[in-house]
Image (cartoon, rainbow, N blue to C red; front, side, top):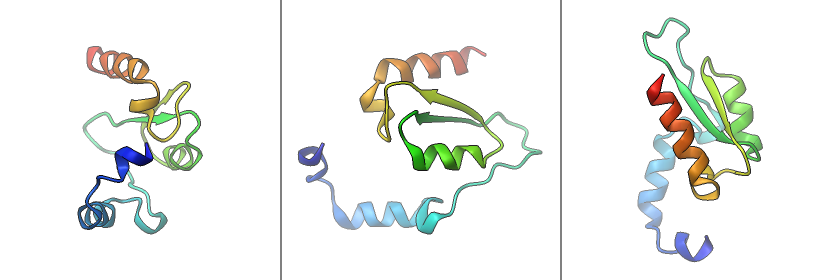
Length: 88
């Protein structure tokens, strides 16, 4: 993972992080009156984003055997979860 991340562009990454709601500990809030479903996928071992998920009005989907990079840790589970969401 370190080797893969070492090729990232620092300035681009910094700009992306500044634009995300997780900057400075803030989390996104989903309106209770929203006209759409909000699904939050999170690795079961990702304590920070699991805690954020608990504050959202969203359907939480824990990805088993995964941490922060759930899509890398357990891609089959992420795909299965997305397929289930899209089928519902």
